[in-house]
Length: 311
Image (cartoon, rainbow, N blue to C red; front, side, top):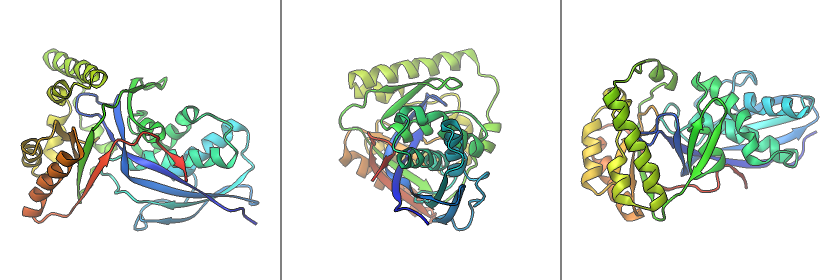
């Protein structure tokens, strides 16, 4: 016996935003993941079906980010005997730099919270979604999970304690996100990063980070543009993305405030100060991939303000 299901949407996210490695992220209007969850009499959490994954995702509850996060929340609530069936509909690419695993974990905890009539505030679901994301990425960083859950632009002051803060979102900001049909493992990408950073790079990076945050508060697009640089992480990750410089140059020439790698890649995003420029930047980036006969997806998106939600 099962009850009518609820449907939850969790948006994709762009993390780092250049100078904010592991501490900045924003939610996209699209793409995102959908989950349908139903209470059952089976007294266990199960995955009934998964679509859009080409058979890649595990169906075992102790290995899937959705059910790992859901079970963590149920354990916290003392409701481990409750039966829930999940239908997972993946509507975003894997290992794309767009927070696919984070969106799934977020959707899982939001669905459980809704089924149980919201015993927790939305923000309080974060540590349980993080447990699902940690399983996938092998790291505890909230720059995808927090914006997917809460929406907007998020600053994580401290990842271990999940000390997070929402930043202002200037009116008009849009993104063009290009996803080449390549896959880059977040866990592998992290292992290849340098363990030490020269002092001169640290100074430049923190200057850009502080300037970007100030630019967001002041809606100063010129300052935001000057700060959309990454002198620490991107020089290493850009080597894994074919035609990286051509894509970046195309977006900047079309009017982007900045063009950078989303997360660990291979997706790249152009941040723009209106939707028309975002469309023009998207077409410019798309032409690079088309000229090289490489498959890709293009998303033109605003910044999703609500985060994961039942609908």
